[in-house]
Length: 150
View 1 (cartoon, rainbow, N blue to C red):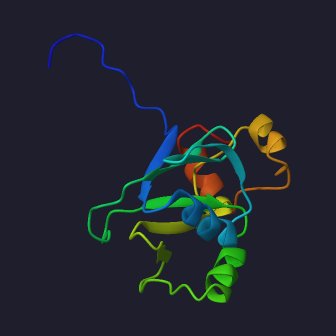
View 2: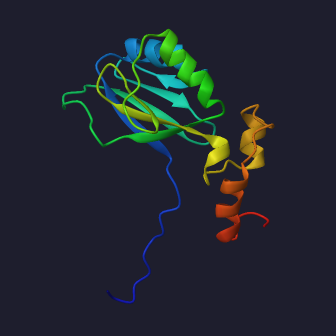
């Protein structure tokens, strides 16, 4: 490698999911999650995640996802498990809470308290989620990187 400075990847702004129909996708995800719609057209919709978003794009043509997935962080993993059950959506085998949407996008549900991923206090306040916290394991991981008090 040369001596030129490379950019450092610092996070994700959004994830784009291809779906068959925007209205059907919004209805599907609306049964599972409370969300704000950032914007919508006939071929796309944007679900707000505070300082990030999910882009739904019309036009899924590839087969069902296997290992390819994204981890969606939630404030209440058990509420998602219940909503999946009530909607008749089967979870995938394994130790994680994964499911496929109707277009074959694989989603893994992750509890905010269990992972390093953190929203700033300002973003949490703007989202009305001021009571979220991290468990000891997540705090230990963050402290080891100098990102939380030990």
